[in-house]
Length: 211
Image 1 (cartoon, rainbow, N blue to C red):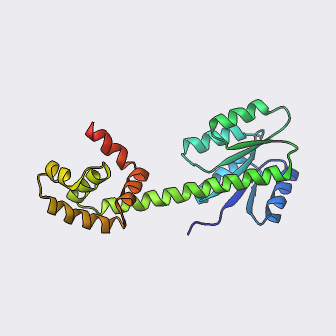
Image 2 (cartoon, rainbow, N blue to C red; image 1 turned 135 degrees about the vertical axis):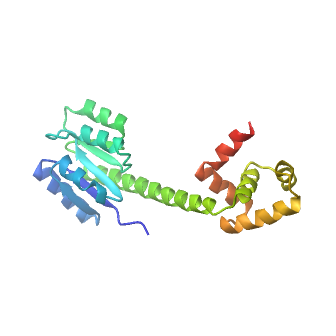
């Protein structure tokens, strides 16, 4: 099971931060507040899922700096930036770096909640994809070399006879390897194998190898 998502609110303005925390808690969303990007970054190793709401203008580490550091560390948590009236150019810069949205103060509470829910959904989808990818790679690692060769032939669209010819084995032997790899991959059909290959990027590499 994925951990419950948390919204991390980063703002050096206590009133704004506390107001956001109250709004999110009222909506039933778990929330953590930080008065600086530095204190948030110190907690980063413990952060698993959710999204970030950060002000653009903060002392020491700005919202822009925070985005750059998250990008450098390959942390894919969605970030929503909030800006003052004169900070639109900074907000656009933030979007270019990787922010998923920006809201100009004073912002509508409902717009904020829509943005937060969208970010949380995106984060959950990314987490599911990552888990599925890891699972598929584990299954692929369990295949023998010959099973992997048959797998790559199947997802490349080759019939058993063509795979047998390529590997210098009999079609019957290909059928045996095919049955074994279907079990190991927990696939019910060839279309299941193709979907797994697409997720893992195996299909692309198989196609390139044929060219």
